[in-house]
Length: 288
Image (cartoon, rainbow, N blue to C red; front, side, top):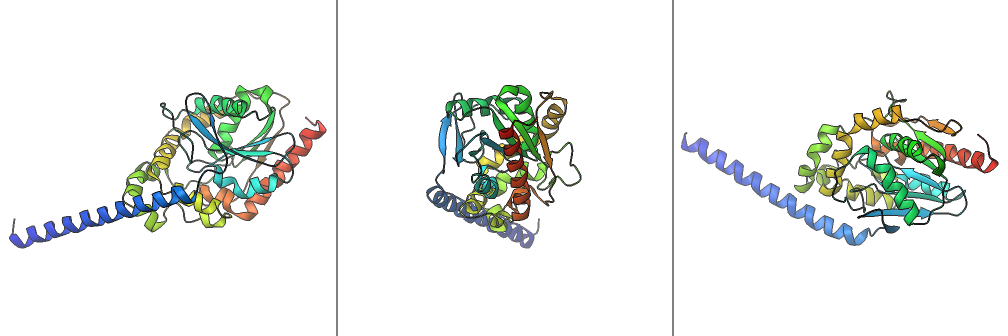
């Protein structure tokens, strides 16, 4: 190899290593600051060997429980939760390994989500039956909950369920990109480019800052990648699930370019809120 070529390659390698070190330092400092800036707003509740984050607002029955889209967390529901709390009690939570919730020892499986949520609600003394509202992948998980715990489910509200609204269901970011994203996050690339968090600013504060922070966190993204890797399994299970025959089910279709925008967009959030409020009213009136 020519000396000039060797020098160019060596210089390039040193520059890349330096950039990675700078990015990793930036990521570490920013994450430490965010941990202090964004403490969890709700409760940490034991759900069977690990703690899950549960955040509830409002009063009244039935309680509404919110299942977030893939890659996101409780903060993604900020607009909806704030509005629904004017009507009844509403709880968002972070699935295991996402947001503030502990991951536990087991990898993500769609079959484990419903038992963990049921254990969480029981341990937190949140009364059943509840209206379960889910968006995107969360809609499939909400369906699995209703099938497994029919007596604890008063109604379902499904926002862009993947099996029904594939045309408008958010498809970005892709599972392959999210699988690689923890490495980009460690090097500070995601934080600098805002690749995943570009639309978080549509949410109210502090939810916008919270979701932006976690969409740049390797631990959160590692678990998100695990969920997306089981997307097809989750959808297949939800399609095969048997629901109680008299269970009220509402489907809502909203436009969105990515998973964050499904609920961050104010107009979308208002449409979802209206659907949930109607479900609450119908349950209170005893409609089937």
